Image (cartoon, rainbow, N blue to C red; front, side):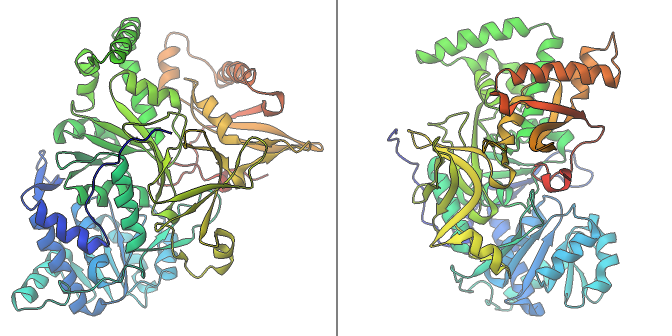
Length: 569
């Protein structure tokens, strides 16, 4: 195991301290880059402005009778979401981030289950909020990110902030001087639910701040960094790592206008750090090589990769210069791509690095606020989830002969528990350990490797364990396949492996533009590819049946397939 020193970071006990310290230390630096209607350029919001708005909003919310209550925040990634979250969690009550893409019925259910007293929302959800208004008997206030006419229970965020500033001017310090109990529940998070219906995770300031503090020791984040905010901010991966972490380190966050605008926004904001999920990066990687192919430069680029890799070994680093055109597609300033929410194909991670773009991945769960393991910028393995955080314990419970067992975690980032769910708490929390439900092993260098979800394991009649994620990773390396899901299908008295496949239509259209194929012909072509993959696997792991889907899978907001909705065996 390498003994590489950690990066130095300042003390951190709670999020109020985080906001106060960062807004003092970095007062004149840019905290957020936002797009306003009618303006194509990013506008900068300084740390000093963040402090002013958070204090005013928090003061007003307390004055409106919301002290100690639960407040939902729901909307797209934007500055107003950020200050709403910060105001609630740093002195008002308990913040409940909600998925803005939820259907009305599910949104209503989440609001009721979490027992919120106020909803801070985007005007893009106005129709849903208005329709559900009559259902929310206990909700006292609805505060809109955007300008609306204040009317009883409904208020605009701008007016609430204005009201809070007036209260502060009159000497109200109830929010500013509020004390934080670092051990108490301060956030309620709904899990994304890939294998079951969502549970509510209860997190404290201690949980979240431990996670931020320890991960920043492993990956260097500096005030000059600019993050691109793309992933849904209600999800703990983006919330902790893409929102609170840059705030802690004095960096900037640029809000992306949407998936179609990623490359444009990266160029405009001069992005250095990009958090994403495998689907985003793998799509980006394919586009890069597609562009190289269209220019007829595939062989040239491959030769230059070999040359620059050899030069790297003797300390001559020319990749950014040689592959400047590719770097410019990502804004020209990218320092690191950070992959989370699921495992990325190792070939893609290495492929980006071959082009001079560092790519590392981490592993986490909402229940751990979220990071459990992280590949460092100075110590990484493409096929590993990463190294455990400093001051965290990770063990493999009940390993088999290959060393694979359930990953269990102990540390200050482990949740307080699931809200009103004693049965799940008994399963997940035992003697201070959190049982993740993920299977994996720890190698001789201390890196954690994930083999699959415990609930997804397919067991043959001979007692062989098959991890569908392993086979899915191999299938996804094929250019024809955009998405896939492997599952066990009953076959007489045993089980056979089947794969649901979504084709990469862009690749197929380009490849067969002069000779279009029928669906049946494409299925046969893909089946031949699957048979080649089968040859790399032991016989009991062979995929015996495939189905080509016309529609993409139902997914969580971090693009993980909701298996429990797809497998109906």
